[in-house]
Image 1: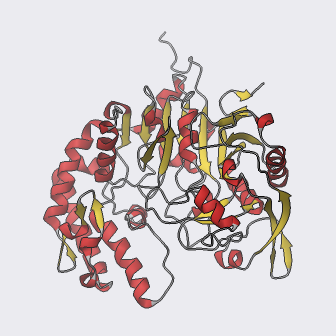
Image 2 (image 1 turned 90 degrees about the horizontal axis):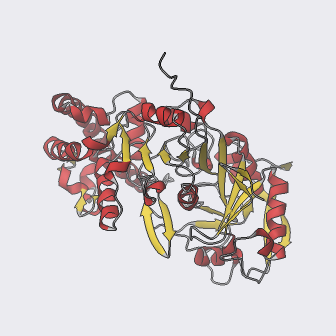
Amino acid sequence: MSASPFQARPGRNVVVVGTQWGDEGKGKLVDWLTETARGVVRFQGGHNAGHTLVINGVKTALHLIPSGIMRAGVVCYVGNGVVLSAGKLLEEIVGLERAGVEVRSRLRVSEICPLILPFHAALDVARELAKERAGTAKIGTTGRGIGPAYEDKVGRRALRVQDLRHPERFAAKLRELLAYYNQQLAVLGSAEVDWSACAWLQGQSLAAFMQGGQMQFEPVLAQAQQHAALLAPMVADVSRELNEAHRRGVNLLFEGAQGTLLDVDHGTYPFVTSSNCVAGTAAAGAGVGPGLLHYVLGITKAYCTRVGGGPFPTELDWETPGTPGWHMATVGAEKGTTTGRARRCGWFDAALLKRSAQVNGLSGLCITKLDVLDGLSELQLCVGYRLDGELIDLLPLGADEIARCEPIYETLPGWSQPSAGVTRYEDLPPNAQHYLNRIETVTGVPIHVVSTSPDRDHTILLHHPYHGAVA
């Protein structure tokens, strides 16, 4: 009788998700956890997300490739829940290779990822400009084509990575899609747009594909065929490979993009992204059963930030020098990894975190950027809101209601001693410890990790997601 494939001890799997509006510092934690995990999976979003890693003082920005690529021997997977710009992925590979990182033998891309093509980005840009001309509120998208690509997926008309293997089929479907998109672009006034100012790939604008405000078939097809040949060796049945790796005892880490409050269902709709950002999406977006998700680590800043439009109950004045919001923005270097846009800054919101804990099923919290608060004499902690005269302690579900929320604050003492670089909890300033203890009490979620700088090694570990409590 042959040996059962289930005799090996299966691996333990961890999901890392952002609990605010993204930009919480997930990349550092994913990179740090790859000391234990040997496979890292990206399961949703597109190249509108960005992670910045700092290793030995050197910054590396990643947008599509999972953060685990910075560690030798770690296999990285792009799951089917990701909408993929093949050109951006290849750009990122080349950039990492120039820095001496070996990528191609360790990167696996799901063959059923929907593709982002130039017309998706064109529609994204045209829609936002049309809103601007009409004087209506923009969503604040990155203009990368993420939303239109997800629309194609749900509308069952998407071109997927596997279609690149069949040139004739790809070309026929592409013609149909271009007719559909050109009709929409014409209605949105695409002929008035300066497409040369709209970037597509490095050194290439959307103007390379446009003529008279219409997207042209031949240049789109030619670029897709070029990308297909380069991408082919990395294309895989990611679902099968992940399940086989788990049975062999490989520890896997599922890396979320954006944050819970940008989730298309549970976020501040319509000021959200186009995918589900919550932990449960890891199962559908990678092709594994939910029983394989053993621990959920929620990443949250010691304060709050948000990029783009939408309600933000604890937002501060972050543009006036000398204010707490300005302190967070400048000390925290709050600029978007992907777009460079300034991040709005505000106090920590425990009522928001409670909503995130509820929809993600958080096992524990990682508090990042605690060191940014060093030097503030006083801190405010939002513990709930007044909404239309009623006291509530959980973030509402609708953007209109959230916009009417008046935060209720507890005042806590700040600290002047530095927390930056501290690696033991007992070495933190006493008031910093008190602040963390209060967050834990109000949110009801245990703090398992604290990050005290962007550097990989500046991490306080209280409970290891893979190994349990730390002595």
